[in-house]
Length: 119
Length: 149
Image (cartoon, rainbow over all chains, first blue to last red; front, side, top):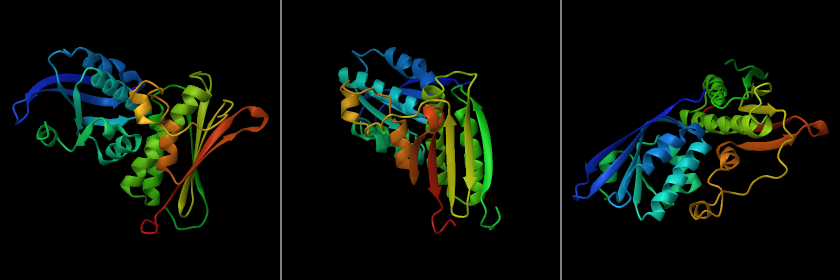
């Protein structure tokens, strides 16, 4: 009954010239989203991908199990020396991510351009 | 919603299957909107009630689809009370506040944030164990701001 999560991987370049990988999520992020969140992240080449953007623009519902998957992704990224930024969260989920402390490990930005400007 | 000082009650029964918490979310959002809550508070309520239902489905009823989760929304003049009921034994103790540093260093389960979010997003939250240790509920209260009421 849980809604599927879709994920898509894009490549882009920051204004600084740094290559950036974007994980774009769509749908709900819940306990059923492990493949979409962790699975898609784990397909990235840790030797070459140094900056990862998480796009939540098309995500409407995130529960605590989904937030746990995001934290798991951040753990793996930190262990691989990757920088993670996120954008496109609603005002409510920006607040929730801030409340649980995610902002300490991933910057939150309103949109992709704002996130890329900091890379 | 009329201004009469009586309480209006809406009840929903959910199967113990993850995903059905969204039925409670949309019902609560509709009631809160009728009461005049701001969108920001409705979003807080939706997350709190979703987490309460997920706890009831996963931990209270242990995903047993023969059991249902009861959700009772009681709309008063200046507050909305929500009870989310399951057939579990309730919480022995409330979990501590999640520590992102411990989670990031693998010293704490990345999960376990639901009750923290509930407490942080509503005005009152209490976990009650039913008589005979069976059947427990969480009671949430969200109040209308003076500008909303």
